[in-house]
Amino acid sequence: MNGYAAILQGLYERERTGKGSGYKVSMFDTMAEIMNVPFIQTKYSDNVVKRVGLKHPSIAPYGAFTAMDERKILISIQNEREWVNLCAKVLGDAALATDSRFSTATDRVVNRPALDAIVQEAFGKQKADDLTALLLSAGIAFGELNSVKGLVEHPQLRTVEYKTEQGKSIEVPAPAVQPSPPSLRDVPRLGEHDEIIREEISQL
Image (tube, rainbow, N blue to C red; front, side, top):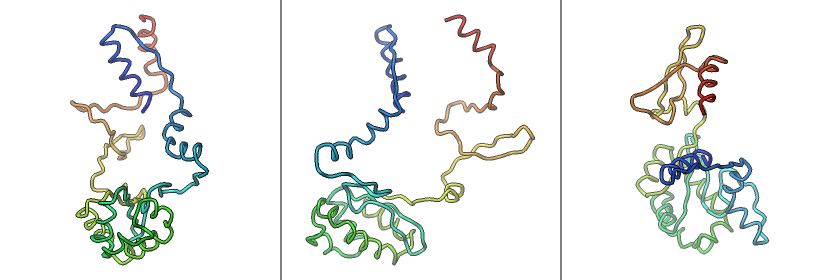
């Protein structure tokens, strides 16, 4: 992504100034930048951030909870409005929003185990479809944690058909970028375009 953005920046700069640009993209630097929040928390405090999986080190409740039908719903409560709505409209306990253990964002993180247990108990009493309807009406960010099988069967999945060298047809996920008009070509064979590439390079 950083490389792609840098190329676009370079093309735009060349269009404006007539001068080209060079860019170096480091995979390590890219990953380090993504970690800026736990980096700052670790470097400038006594808090050593631990691995939390699908949870968030500074937000609670945040993570995947299991519904009655064993489907997992991931939620992210990032402000007080969402917290109040979760309690009243999804968990069915409006008073929980003012419980002294959970009344502020910091309190909720400190008391995460107790809070997660309460959320899980409530989620475990309802089916996933009912929970997603409640979350949607409450204006709370959520998503279902799909398996690969869930991806294969997802109603919004677009696929394209490819022919193998043996003449068989297979479906694979469609490219995220959809050009107009559509363009779908076979994967080139090894060395297929060598001469064309050499010709282009020789003219630089």
